[in-house]
Image 1 (tube, rainbow, N blue to C red):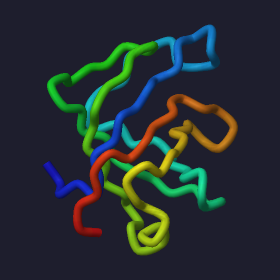
Image 2: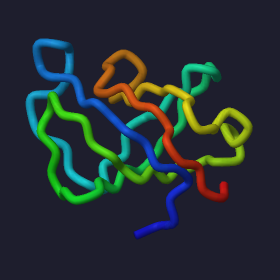
Image 3: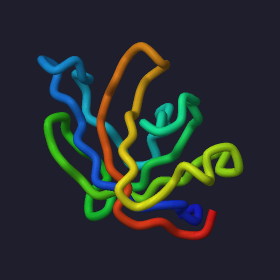
Image 4: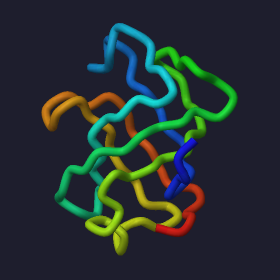
Amino acid sequence: MVKPHFLAKIYFLKLNEGGRISPIYSGYRPNLKLDTFDFYTCCMLNFIGNEIVETGVHINTYCTVLSPQIIKEHVFVGAKFTLCEGPPRILAHGEIIEVYEM
């Protein structure tokens, strides 16, 4: 596993909430947008205790940001964010619960 930048609690939206039909696999790389910074970057998710996650559930996951230097100052415990497939489609909402070295 690649060294994560933070640990987050994420809720994946159900289909009727605008989410995906199919489950999400550990290693997935959605777009990440922090609520405090108007910029999209890519991150990799590594789920804790699961390889596959169905929609409509909360899960803790390690997040590795592919461009950490860009968002570094906006990553802190309690920061909220959105995960998307491209900017228009929101997949999940999350909150950072622990930050590691970026």
